[in-house]
Image (cartoon, rainbow, N blue to C red; front, side, top):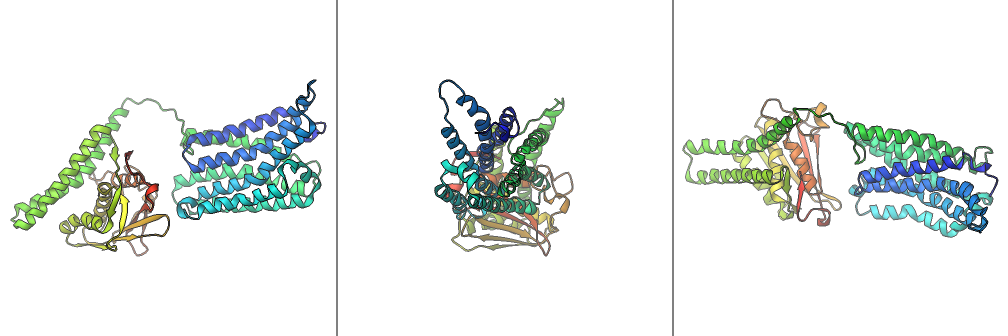
Amino acid sequence: MGDGSERGMPGEFLLLFTLLLWILFLMVYLGNRKSKLNKWFFICGFLFSIGVFKEYLYYSLFPQLMAMPMLVMSEAAAETIYSVMTAVPYYFATPAMLVTGLYFSRMEKRRPGLFPWITLISFLPGIVMSIVYPITRTRYFQLNDRTYYTIISIYNVAVALTATFFFLNALIKERNPKVKRQKLAIAVLALVPSWFTIMSTIPIQLFSVEGAEKAWQGNLIIIIVLVGMYFVLVFKEGFMGSRLRHETYRWDQDEKLVEQTIDTVRHMIKNQTAKINWCAANMSSGAGEKEIQEYAGIILRATRRISDFLNISIKGGSEFKCTPEVVDVYSLLNGAAADFKKRYPNVSIRILCQQGSEVFCDETLVREVLQNLFQNSVEAMGEEGTIDVEFKERRRGFLHLKISDTGQGLPDNIRENIFLPYVSSKNGEKHWGIGLYYCQKAMAAHGGMIKADNRPGGGAVFTLYFPKKKKGMLNHGSRKI
């Protein structure tokens, strides 16, 4: 096993190195145990850490066990354990890094049917190599078979480069500055120690650079820095589901929370009372019997929505019940647009949807989302223009519902934060920036999402994404939105 000079740094430092790795990646996992990205980030870090831990075992712990009067550990057993623990990161650490990169780029959302196969194929070469080059003899191949080490080197570099591509591609495409900062930190946390390990082992071992065999142990400094970076991010703005923050108590904090809650209620009631006032004005101006019935229907729907909203607010604050069911899209869109077509005769709402199309959703919540978006478009167009509502069925992933208008579009300075509460592109005391925040949370309750952008020819476009498969959505219960 050698005299211990081959191990590089003392065993205590190797053990510290291992513990730091485990602590760092365990904290990431515990930050959000339901997140696949967090889970694979942990798996990736654990597989890389095995290479450090086996150095401590082989050069520090095993010699002590072998020196005991009773034979606790034989040299053959030590060699076998070392070989297995060397093979695991050789064969499976970079594939885990690749899967982490795939989740980082949201491949499971963009290609849900293909994603499981990509994951399986990522680990297949490692499985094949573990059969061709048995993992119990890895140390022998490592020291005596240059072809083996060449194959291992090419394999790990190729997989790591592929993983890096997915990380960088996701970073380049991310537009939200806050999310991009978080993603950049994740990429640094995943790529820097991984690439340092790869580049400080493969070339040195492949070309037999003497005296630099343990250069990879310099990663300890990098890990210490990254642990510090992790805690800074966790305290500063939260990171990968974890957040620690000290807050000084402010005597006026409760008052501010009450004001924000009141603003939320105001926004909802404002939209509904506007309909009621409009209907009442038309009814008092001598409308016919048929029109009066239509106005009465609008009033009843508005008052029912206000009643439901207030009941929910009393019972659970911001908790809305989401009960999806199969809904006819054409009827849903025409029903949501009906009130606006009558209230704003100079606004054309075009429904581009085949009859018979269906979506699995909570009709009440989605109707409220649509009416929020319609109202925003009407105001952005000055109550005159065109709103296009287009429903598309995709073969994989999500069903798309696009709402676009011919208004002024979204200002660049707030477009990335448009779904945050109290952010609004409209001026005046009547606008509180709650509507789009509501829309985002309502879509999240369905397991979907909403995105905003500007049309090339002018105007804004909002896209609602509904999971195509029912199993990916809520089918009962409630979600806080």
